[in-house]
Length: 427
Image (cartoon, rainbow, N blue to C red; front, side, top):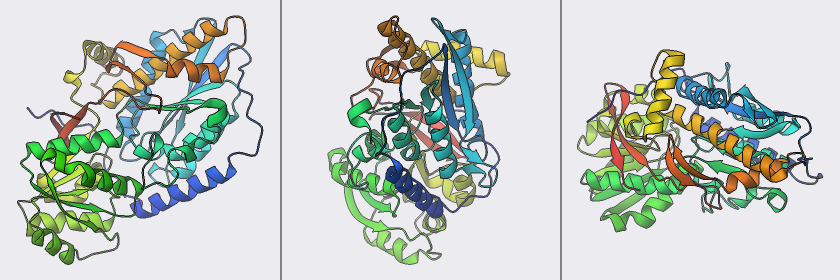
């Protein structure tokens, strides 16, 4: 069965994806250069008010899903009465997007992380939303010893070594000796998504795969992983090619795909003009070729841009249909509908669980601290040790590198100009 379409806002003009990726790398370089060389921030919290920061893109095409993450956080905090023991917990919402960009902005994310890092009452930070964008905030928050929980960011380099990002993941943790790894995420990483993609391809009868990428580190990471593991899934990699972001006529690349006798193409890079033209022209020149991509690429503006090529598009996302989650998720949906009068997007579950887990860690840390002031490092340690049972996402815990033990991924298709959930994948 195909689900109802995902909620999304009206598409907005896209900032050049290559330019955005370049800006991310530039901001990360500045952040990393600025880390270190100072005494570790005081991590003891004075007073009885604790603050949890939330950094979500509340402008642009992802506004509704990001807003639902925030709403999930608010519901979890409200159900706890806004308190953990003797502490009052306050949620501070920061916009990770700007009106000028009309989508998430690397400089704004940097500012958000710095704001949290400077707040002596800050003990946790929920963010980021987009794949790879946490690379900006993780070093800043690690420098301050603040727990960071991403509901959605699946970028591989944040938790494990990948050749596409030199010195990963250690480069993101400048104060690892003092605080360890302060970043955790609720969705499986892209290494798991690669397995889900291969499962999806196998179910669709793919035998020969052409792997495409550009200079985007996420896309390069996918390309390497798929090439290394495709054979285990009965799929031969027919070739690997680069997509030129500025190429307006992809005929040469299409000829290479046809000469390789590929029955499917994977592309995991940025959503620039070159990728859009390839998607459009390939679906016409070779209509039987299936086009696979991660959900981080296929957002509302991309779907609108590729038009009829959406019919040949197969997508993986780290979510399944709302009805496929455990019973606690159904209770959350009812609470959400009662409060907001409409059903949530799946992302809301992850905002709810992010806050719920943070509150549980604060409770455990406060109990361990006893009469001593609560310390940020105590919260980080308590979060690492969590064994979450009976949650809206199911039972899970965290691996030492920050990854979740959850491994669900969903298969999606573009139907009627909307991304719709089809079925669960093995990953």
